[in-house]
Length: 255
Image 1 (cartoon, rainbow, N blue to C red):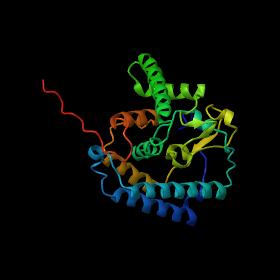
Image 2 (tube, rainbow, N blue to C red):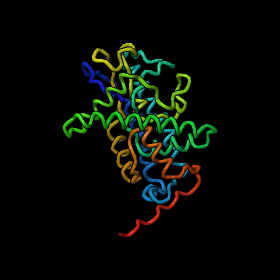
Image 3 (tube, helix red, strand yellow):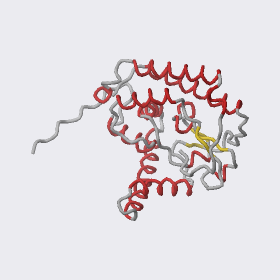
Image 4 (cartoon, helix red, strand yellow):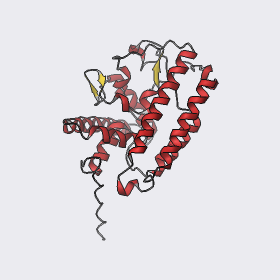
């Protein structure tokens, strides 16, 4: 999520110790289990995945959290992040896996205020797109530059994530990997500045490769950005509950 370069790399020597290796192996086992469930390759048509998939995902998140906690403690990193800080929740969440967007929809759709949540996501997505288009007009065709400028701008204005409620994440247990990996060694007020020292504690390479392959197999034609992805998925499902079948896409009108 962080869009400002770290002043210097953060060294985490414990990544190769026995505890990290065991947790990495457990995450890889769970990722392979997720990739082996029925329905992955048909998801674009059926819009359905079994409960076992989401059970494995919950366990994967728990193992990843344990992996992060172990490495922060073992490497004596003085993390200043604390519950209720929420500074990282005021940056644009992106880099989400398709199955994380799916899981969040599954969690959010039953809520009585889902309509309000969806409206907030739409506003957030529209504001980001409008800002991106303004930067794109000035970037001489460099859309990567326009995107970076947009991410830095949204970080600077610190607008809360639509899923942040009373300064707390309303989907904390189900938050994406890109939210879990972000940490700061300096005061939160510096998180999006050049003097801030933030870093990402990424999943192990083997786990990331399995999840990326799974992501591609889902054939999920939506955005990796949290708000945009949830809006697009809700529209594609016509706001139907998770258990309902995916609406059929009408054939293209010839000519």
